[in-house]
Image (tube, rainbow, N blue to C red):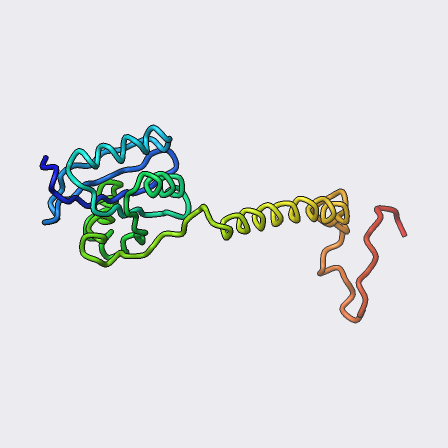
Length: 184
């Protein structure tokens, strides 16, 4: 392709693989491909996109979760990254749901200007505070869980009394003692 051509990239992120779609400035799909979620895969994703022309912007769906590593890599690589929301339900019903369609949709959102959000960077102090809060919350749950379990009886359910509610006298305000199995 032409070196002087600007292209827009969309990425649908997942745990094990990211799917990328590259569009030209007219919105034509130049190509789509999957890459592993490794540093090598991120490098392949960036260089493959650049093989179509100068990358104007990269729209990434899910920069806060599965796309966080990709976001870091692409910004360090020098590419402009835009956070893209998941496609709305009407679009998904109309076009269907595939990773390639989602990647194309992300690129189209960037190209049209609908997606222009700056993704949260993971380098700042805010991220360090978030990590500390997540660790603290996990530690608090771990400490409080054994304490909650120790107050419980050995059996998770109350023992059956052997008497049904129908056997209780109607005029009694208190609950009868459990039936011990011995004759009275």
